[in-house]
Length: 166
Image 1 (cartoon, helix red, strand yellow):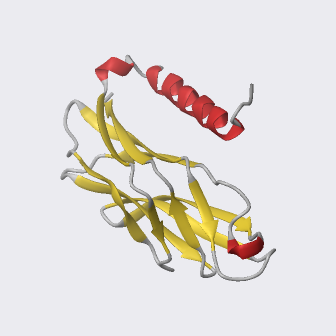
Image 2 (image 1 turned 60 degrees about the vertical axis):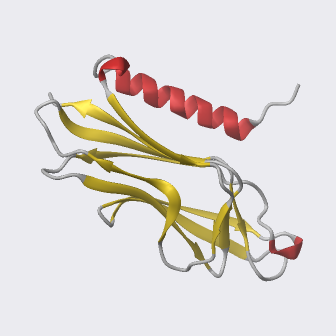
């Protein structure tokens, strides 16, 4: 039997996050928002561009809900780029709220022959967002750095759990 360590770590992080959130009340009492894509996607942009399909609107602040925990999960990311073996590849993934970066995470890899990155770079970003008086657009974005291409083979999702106002 083989164990996929990256998916195991992701599963453990997701379980830890769910347990931490349920400490504030029943998970079933929360409202959830979710968007996903299963299409292969890639970008060579050297500036932030939206990841197709990974966006939704958070509702305005109400007496019931005051904040949200937003989770972006991209388990199949990898980097490629022109150049020789050993070249440094890189990229940045963002969670944006109304166009403003709420969280970001950088990724890097050394190129193997043909410019491919040395491994998959699964990524999860979790950020707490305070709800505003109007609806807010939440979206995932990404960019390559050092002329790198970021590719996602088949799945990515973004979700939000609305938290009750205390």
